[in-house]
Image 1: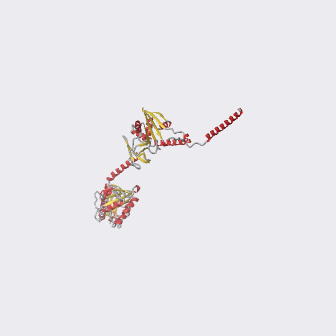
Image 2: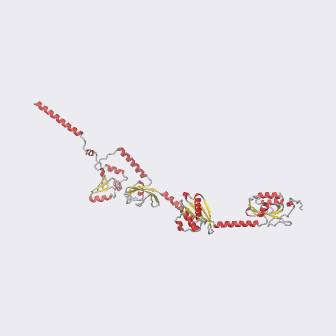
Image 3: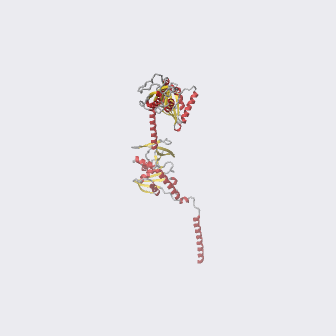
Length: 530
């Protein structure tokens, strides 16, 4: 009996053991429930901070990491400067939480609905928490290599922006600064040491509707700095890149001063100046142009084209008047083409009797400058001078004596008709040539030698008159008269029997005609005369 109970108990124990083993295996190897994976993931640790009288008492690990990454020394100031860049008026939550005990505020667009919760527990105790609804009840698993790469890239970008030699900031639609780089922060601290809390002061106020690259100034106590502000849209905000433009402003100012100096100089010129651009529109003119052309200043100020200006001159009869209009247009087109290709000069004989010299010269970038100069007095003086020269030539030609004038170097300056008839037209080109001609005619007679010495020496060093044989072997009286500038006038007169040479003031006594020394070489004459 005892053995039966023993066997029965052993069988029961074996069955229970098998059932327990099956139950345990089923529990260990069954498929996981749908919600088990979510439950197994770790919960995201919140960003929470506890302050007492604005001094940090406690904080979660993510909150401490956030504070360590923010610039500044005071935990409260660092946190609220960071919050001011992401939430609109977060300081208002402090007052609301003091009244209601708790308050919440959502961040602006683009920050994934980030929420700021503040609980005021009284006695100066304040709990601040940042909540991201998309991460609530969710674990975060980040690849360590990807996180390191993102942190490195973020560090490079942050350092590059902070070291940029330009002012960079972002501002919202109301003009409030929501972010700024290190250069902007340093400038703000230098100019407003007591206003470095968020929102930062606006250093450069730009209109909300500004576009492109407006230029703005930043004034300090002793200087003015200029910036070219490049505007870029950034969602509902805009990013501003203020590039220093002091060098460009100085260059433009120097150019403007130079143009003003030129304008003042041109205003005093008696020559009319008109400069046309590549489209042949008037860009610059001086008052002399109005005086010379009689064009209306309003017409010139309207920047007419070149041909419009020439048409205006034609109406005022201030251009040469051809017979037909087409011919006039062609001549004006030739003037414009000549001025565009190089220096071009024309003389305009106006219907009113005036004479203008019009000079056209090309300028860089296809521009053309025209100079209008009244040369009526110059032309009149030239004509008068030519008339006097013609009169002097007529007077010389009316003299019976053969007259020639030589300069200090022996060049022939002029001779009358009687001289050309006696010795031949242009028989020689210089005094040396004529001396050879006279020597071939009069040989080396004392009369020729006296003439040569008179022409070579200063006045008074040699006889100034005498006699030589002429081309027809007749006796000629010669006279040398010194003129100003080293010039000399030589005249020859036919000798008349029994009449001495014409007296010359200050001249030495002239030899008697037909002396043995002067006539010994003449045909039919002997050394004793007859």
